[in-house]
Image 1 (tube, one colour):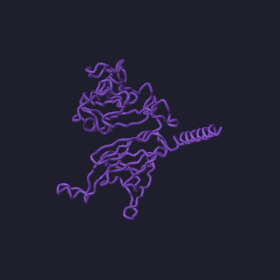
Image 2 (cartoon, rainbow, N blue to C red):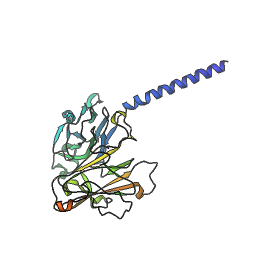
Image 3 (tube, rainbow, N blue to C red):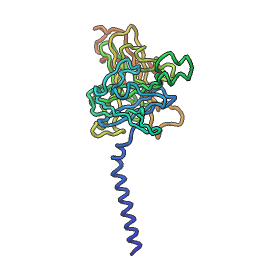
Image 4 (cartoon, rainbow, N blue to C red):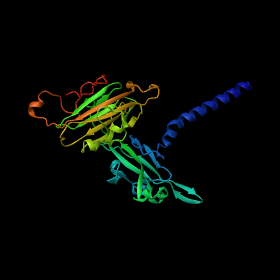
Length: 333
């Protein structure tokens, strides 16, 4: 009987431990910090804030500091930080830098905690820089002393809005092993597309694109505005996400990307993006075409005349994605 009582007590203790662990699973997970770090040797990192009350922590390498300054509670509107604005404009609050004790003296660490307090209607990317002051660079030689600071790393953060940029019927999906062809004509200069589930977009930098239609050579990466001066790419919530923001789920929530241009071009310009499958349980050990999809976008420089319009589909439409890898010519849609 004594042995049974011991077993019963042990069983109850194990059950209580499991229940406590399960109760802490969600609560404790909520306290975990999603840290995005620009470590030495890294010049660009990207992340996103999607759900209201979600947090992210930005850090720089030991010899670099965050810009705009943490106390300013501002962000950069572009990677070059030519314009700045208050984080409250995008529904984000900035936490004070944490403090650590070094040699008995309390010092601030360069650690910025951002919280998405509310999802504004529209999505918007924001940027931060990790900069190295001149005084920390003088040891590297006279050539490094020409400017006051050097941008060591850029942090891109996609702030998701509450409203998708498109509708399920208008949004295009790029499926692995296929190519999605899109033409943006002068009468409509906007399209929203997404990767198939478990896919990420390349280039990750929204201010870059691949030139041409190969989407494979790093040397083909260029600034988007070099090819189309008025173009911009924004990441947000897909219109076909399985879960809304109130029941957030990583597997059900899909990202979508909206490319928008304005004005006319003299000639047709080709842009290329690539979706890459990231699910480790599905990746082949060797590069395989079934793990990628290309988005081939032609920004038309031709002015549409009444004779050309006829029964043609509207701009931004695309034909059914082709599974012929060599068929890279855009479909007239």
